[in-house]
Length: 497
Figure 1 (cartoon, rainbow, N blue to C red):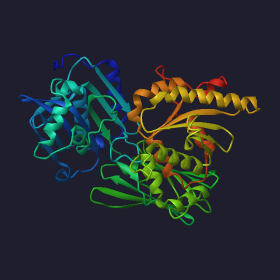
Figure 2: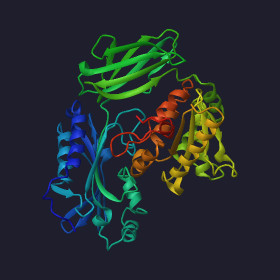
Figure 3: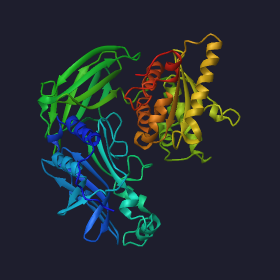
């Protein structure tokens, strides 16, 4: 079943690997440690890899806090720390070989008729537990071999599950073991074996950054391995109407940037006057490689009356946060209904006027939510806690959008843009196989990452027109590399971005 590695990866796989390596060119040499987690199946004196994740850091990692191991008759799982100035080079060498190395043993991905694929995400890796909104965490995933090939088709996963239940350190099933070792697949719908490389940001803007009266205080944490002369903070000062009043750049080795030494990270602080303005949009970069972007405001104030009132009913927005993530159900135990409510509240707080048709049993078959921006454009929203095209949601959504557009045209509002959008509770990686179909239909896709970002910016002034434009840009790219465009674009004779 395991074929020897004799032929190189297909060119498309090599291209993705090269893209990731080139992307991290400015910061790759900064990484000096990594956590490596893997799950493998034992085969005589060797092992076959089911899943592995390499997370790169630009500071030391305490091996005592990270190390973990598990062994049963047929399975082996480990988490350990790799420390060296060449960890990035090591990770790339392993990826190109289709294996990881531990205790002198090369542990390869299975080779079967499934083939090999790779995907580089230049911005984020949703299933990494350290991921934060707008903090850049690029990743590379190499997929090769089906899980059944690694486990052995004759065994069957139910046999593996019982093996886990009766082990010295019992697990309920293989998924619980995978989660405990931080090996959740970025696309759980694909039952394939994989190696991930995740590159954490070597510097980031701290949550303690704030606006205090007429002053902005921006605090950032930086690995000691970074050269301050290459670290740069860009910012713009914005009022409550989101009008830009100033744009500035600060090189972090300038006197206006104050530094405090730390054990593993140094802390930089930049302070400046913003007058009567209320917001700062800050961007942190290293050697022209973008690391982090945030909105900064007075954390004690709301600048949005709708979200302020929502905060009275839901202090700290804990209910909204739990509903969009599916972490907690209401007393009615209706995950779909809770999710729709949270999406509707976020749209309202962002300045849309939403019609929540999904709330009523007699209207929910039409569409979940129709939301009107301040400029009069329309989002036709379908919410899902599962697959994008579950129960033919995509075709139904495009059909309803066409009806809405034609109706508006009949009453003299033909110039109104109407954009279908499906909002999912899942991260982008989990719905990756369905994005092509959504793009072909001109349907925008809003995933868990965008919902979390929207929640993080809910205190800001309403900006429904800007958000409408952003959603239109979320129509997935098709195979030819271009966006299909939304329904409104197609109806008006245009193309997507």
